[in-house]
Length: 164
Ligand SMILES: [Zn+2]
Image (cartoon, rainbow, N blue to C red; front, side, top):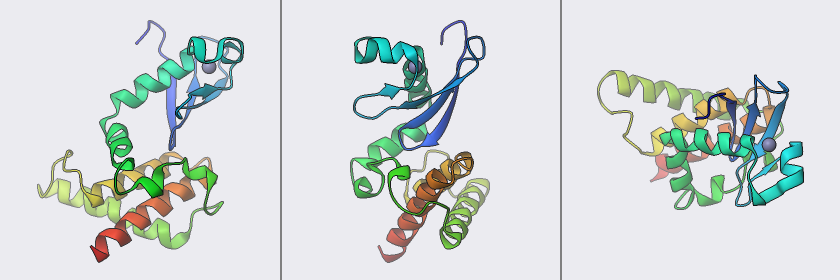
């Protein structure tokens, strides 16, 4: 990290909101897609040639979050068709109540198994993916369409596991 820490919030998928409390104080939208983009002036001026501080902060944030990395890894395998795009680009505009119920149940089950010693924080399975998606959904509450995407992912994983 640099001397001045930027605040990074995951918005789900590859999207982040980055704020520099010591700078303008305005937040910027960063998308760490194959070609990362930011909506700040620095990026508009220099583009891909030299990533702006918001993109670098978002990358550092993502790389520091092992769950985020693992979700990336999983997206290249069996969940590819579910999470290869940011959830905001598809699906319902607001969370589906049934999906919320299923996602919250998965998160509760994951926490219970963790508490009871039936799993560790690094037991990566379908329930973990569903619980992670539910957590992302909670963090994205300010943007209902993104939360809806994560809840839908959680439900899809739970339903996939149920028939497996
Ligand atoms: Zn920027």
